[in-house]
Image (cartoon, rainbow, N blue to C red; front, side, top):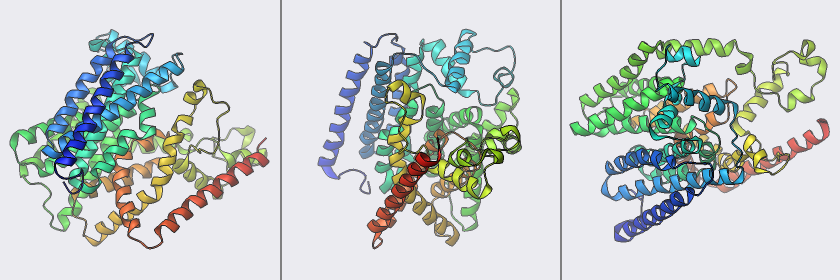
Length: 493
């Protein structure tokens, strides 16, 4: 097990104790949640499919890793359930952000119509991202889910990302598997995205991890029945991504092609069986072809249209107004102040400032106006605990990405999963840093980023004075934060 868990009977007993303790705590939390006012028991029903999936994911692991896989799911679900219930107790007012209000309203209407529309979904919803409407509507229609039930379903889907990432990391980089699985289970931002509001991000994280898990498993599997299982899982995940966040699917597809070509050029055999390669091709082809009947263009066409739309949309090209926009003279803001946010800011400041905000925002050193939970949940303040983890990971992720890049250039990196996820991360963050997207678009990449962070921390630990370098990074961040606060106090009224 390459150090994943303690060896021998002692390690097995320790893993089993964690599973038993987590299962007991989860059952107690599920029972106590029934006492919440204004909710029904649908939250129990939405957990069952996730539990079945978690069991299947665990069963395909080696015997020594099965208990670890189930423990990760149980503890991840427990944390998300407690956070969701706690959110309702702290603020019983039903509050949803703009996107979530749309998701809830239109999914409810779709459930009322028995998931049948008179027109094509892309016409009815006015978007190619419609998969989450059908996911929520199916839970409402067939499981009687209320808003709380849908939030618990989000938590269950988010919890599944932990054992899935544990599973594919065991193949790509075994020594990092437990690190990745545990951090995904307990990461504050991922818990918040599941527990507060009604977002599609938990299901996107789940589908992304499921797709990566299925394809990576296909590269190593030889048994026919298991090949079929992974192909079915990968196809389902691909179809959901294609219809819920299409560019994530397109980037995975493009990145896998790049990885296969890269490794083919150096003579690496990626798939244990040729049939597995064919199944991967069928998986992506199915996800491309089936939505065509519903007026979805092919992914390359959608990407081209999206790039053209982003370049012509000030709301996407320019980040929200920030410090440099607010301190510049009014005369520089354009005629009648009509320039888009950040569009009129001096270029020498705007682009570096936007890059820093996308990388380090929301800034945890800026306190909320008050500490009421209703205020915290309406802003981005609940992301602050996760941002501290993110700040710690940034130099580690960068180091890991550079290490893999060096291996690709030198033709020493021969693991297809590593090359695939490296290409995917590069393309994804090229978009994230180029246009105005929400911070949660960054957080959904944590399963991949943690893999590279482990490589980075392993490399740094072997360098002299690495503690001094890392401490210098934090000191620099502290100085920047202090300077930012001082400048805001002096220049912004």
